[in-house]
Image (cartoon, rainbow, N blue to C red; front, side, top):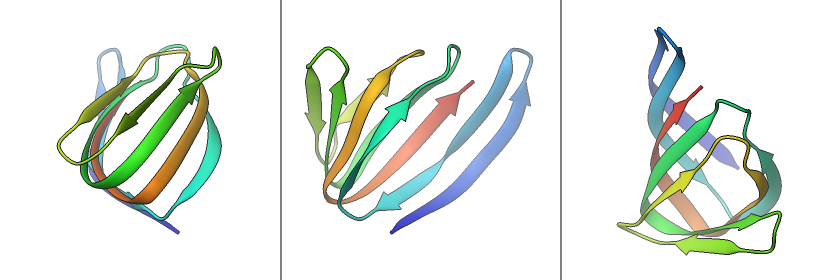
Length: 90
């Protein structure tokens, strides 16, 4: 189960900006960022892991932030029910 509370959805001269809060129960899926899409999120509660296509990974928990760059491809795994704040720029 996933829930998104998008607080900002605005057009910028160079694209779109989205900010809000996201909550998700444990699970794993593939992610692929567009050529100009990037995300920065901060974990409020829970744990997650992001694996890249080259075999590297980052795991984050409460108080930690993670940046996902343009063109990123890999897997996103929610290890413990997760609540984050996010900012996505396209």
